[in-house]
Amino acid sequence: MDDIREKLRKAMSHERFMHSMRVAELAVMLAKQFGADVKKAEMAGMLHDCTRDLDLRQALIVANKFGIILDNVTKNSPGIIHAVTGEAVAKHEYNIDDREVLDAIRYHTTGRAGMSLLEKIIFIADYTEPFRDFPGACRARTILKDSLDGAVLYAMESTIEYLLDKKQLIHLDTVDARNYFYLVQS
Ligand SMILES: [Fe+2]
Ligand SMILES: [Fe+2]
Image (cartoon, rainbow, N blue to C red; front, top):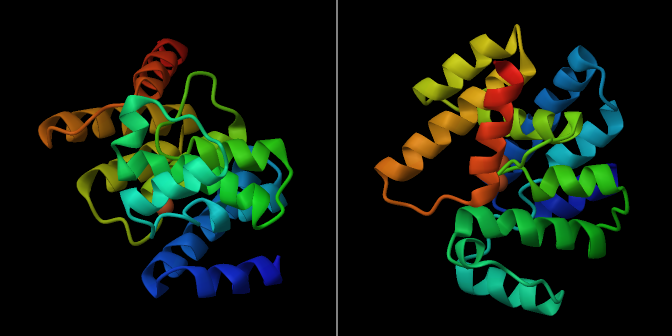
């Protein structure tokens, strides 16, 4: 774990590294609260943004290097593509072979229908880590005290509203995730 942390420290900006450590710390707390594997939560939290500092052109090169076929939304969205390249880099450059950890990295931005407990924890830890100060993060933290699924649903809906407002692309996985949690909650 320490060697991964040190490798990450060198591979990303200081701000990104500190964000990753806060997400890992919160993910550990949430794993304890909701009964997930603490070690996997820490690992996925640390690594979730391991390629977030790449720009879109660099991310496309990484995706190509690992033979990843990208859909049209992903290849045009730096905010989404880094989750796909992050999974590949975690696997091939940080030697992570745990499917649950890799999936938690892969789906930490879009979410998806039927998310695993670990996927939900990393998604919401990223959304609510202590330095997140937008109003949605505060509301999600409040909901999280009672319901992980409720907090993820809220975050999905807020994200979709935000993306529409900013005229950005919305990945179908996010729509699927929102509908999935809407139905689970109702
Ligand atoms: Fe991210
Ligand atoms: Fe993040």
